[in-house]
Image 1 (tube, rainbow, N blue to C red):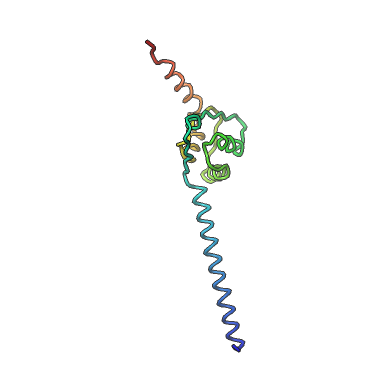
Image 2 (image 1 turned 30 degrees about the horizontal axis):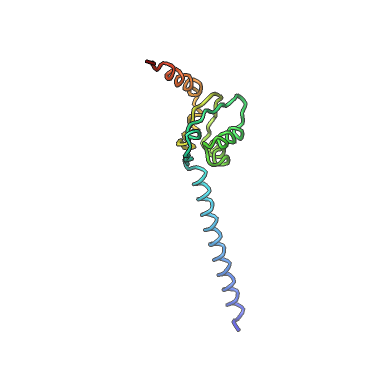
Length: 136
């Protein structure tokens, strides 16, 4: 039968090993969570209708409402990731009408939505370009 000091040493060794293992697992989980939140994920779409979407953001829309709208239109993968990324980078989203597509990353979408000059001017320009196409 091992003596008392050997048992104490063994218990300390088990506790220290367990603490290190727990710290390692927590660090790995936090790294993976941070990676997924801050990455620039692109939503891939096979259908033509999902490829390009026009998004209307009204004055007073909350970031949660906007993220839900983008998720519904299949432009982002996760409402939570979009929300956290917008808060982390400090983006302010402006009201307007935006043309977005599924091949844009979350950060590209955030940059476009936070542009004061973007929005309606882009839609009007796009519509003007198509209306000026000569017909024979």
